[in-house]
Length: 290
Image (cartoon, rainbow, N blue to C red):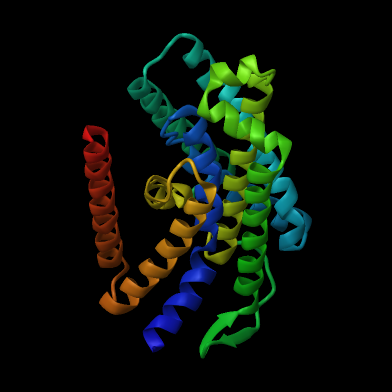
């Protein structure tokens, strides 16, 4: 029971930003089918922007979330117009697009290092109070961050699933030609998807950064699990991504507490992801044969 309660509390409070980041990546993946490696730098960018605004203007952490998220969204749209849209018009293949995104990731990472420097940076936040939840001591800041992430994730879920614009996003992702015939403007909807994905990634980066520290590889360290959460949770259902993200955070915490080493926990979880994806692929192949 101690392991279960510790895993739930610590997993939810420490890994809640994973859900937000995975939802943003799922939007891009569902629309383009592209494994956009540069999305990891969107997360890092959000962390750096939030830290810079927080320390430069002495603003409360929750005050800087809006500008950090909006700026990350604008940078995401800029990369679409500068890199990915021209590549799509030239009919660049899927593998080449992944290579392009990997190169963009390297450029953005070194650009952030050039602007903000190489040392690890920290947010300027007041010392938190400790609150006990299910017998586990958690900082008040992490609980507030968890609540904020959950609210933002649910708002994004509601926007995609319940609004007219969300319907257009889902229609464009399902069939671009049919969506265009139906009167949907692909460019407008595509820009909105890239913007929302950037906002989600930037906000996730801010929460990751304030929870520990800000470093050039912050987003890259999270990218593999973001990708696996999206692949396992399903790209057609944002709700599945949310569930997979929560389960991943809790499972990773449980295995870390059990093994005593986060590396062993990560390897075990990655192995589990690979097995799930392989079984799913085999089941889909059997269904197609029938």
